[in-house]
Length: 421
Image (cartoon, rainbow, N blue to C red; front, side, top):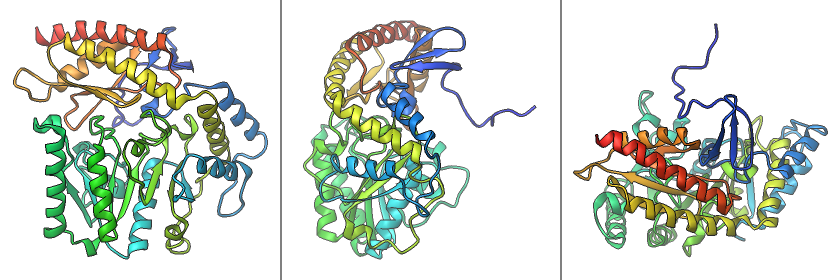
């Protein structure tokens, strides 16, 4: 009998029957509040009526129109609408299917545009599972181990993880920038460095906001040395952080921006955006793909952007994010073992530590599993698996946030008492 690969590890035992808004309805008849959103993908909630209608209509017209063979209206419409949200300088877009593919397209473009070989990524970053993307990923060894050799020309610099270092944020930023400068002086000269790549907030690496001062330091060095600054907005983009793009919490503009996940409410599509002059430096034939820019996914993307605009979901992410963060801080103060409560918009986390201040993945997993019994779905992350991440839909309501907080508090009470004995 054929079965799914045993390498696939399920975070929950739930088998979905159907889903709507913030809720998943299991085949077991239970209703679960979904604060995973498919790892930040179902941005407008499950099965938003306008997204469903757009996809249904498109499937009756054309499903697959391979975009290096023929163009289709949804892709042209999506490009036009995306331009309303992108920085004005980033006026050229290439589409793929997944975040990993978009990351690889971005580093390929950066290497071609600069004629330089090296890419500098940052500790804790997650950029994908394909070989090149995994070579840039240090969110955990599970993403990059067991299939060496990885892509050459990649160097890893420290990320300003203030909580881990036990420092004020400004000290962590100063340290990380000094170490980057040392890397540029000792390992990858600026003349050999094509790009910096970083997330505006770490995803799988622990849900840590990248300090604005650090992004601004990267921008300054990139400009001085002719290095491309690539921002991986796969998870932070499309309103997740309370601004449309995560980097908008700083003053910078990237040279290349990567987006995926929430852009089409669950349909697979991703993109990179860059200035036309930079995109024109890609070698002819270097951009393409059988399924890239799929017509149904693009139609869902158009509807998603319309819903986000019409329902003011970026503002809702900020407001409900503040509500959720306040509740998490209140809950965190009442439970030993929660070392840090953090978040930006609807991208929030609890970091668990033991009595010695070391990572406590057992506690994080226990709470995540206990939450299932409270009909709440959550995920863990972080290099050591000790971070509980909370990712509601952008249209989550005040009552749903309150319900999630009550369920989480109950799960904490059950799980931590068992773990601590």
